Length: 111
Length: 114
Image (cartoon, rainbow over the protein chains, first blue to last red):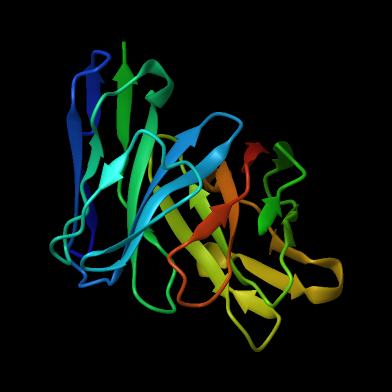
């Protein structure tokens, strides 16, 4: 089944403890992206990647890192999470000329 | 800079009634436009997209949208709403067909009355 898989689905962590949210797609898509969703703010793009080793900042990149060493994987790294990064995170991928296919989301709570 | 506005935060319609969700964008050239739906607790699903050509676009689940350049709008419509259409709907815009950058509106929550 064609899909974008994120892990974990739920995560509670403490301030400052580094974490990684994994994202993998099995559709051979060139483009991948991370979004965060907050009430009243819609989805805001954190980072995106147009191919292996090619990444660029979205609208809210501060406090996040990404890497794209393989086409299928696009992990999101929070080096030192803070409470304002508590949010619902979505990974997505797309082909050229297509719409994004979204993962099921990761709900992160930073205490 | 690109931006997307969904003027209606919350809309309630009766089952069987018609629906129109508004989306206005701000962009100098012809944008690439999308509508997504998010059911509670779920990820986002693509309903339809507009890149060029016919300004009336058909999507899944009986939805359609019309691109109106003069009004900078891309409104989503459905002739007869079903209870299962209750969800949050997002309009999004990209600068080019191959951009990785996609900007979303704040969303419209649709409630369907029996």
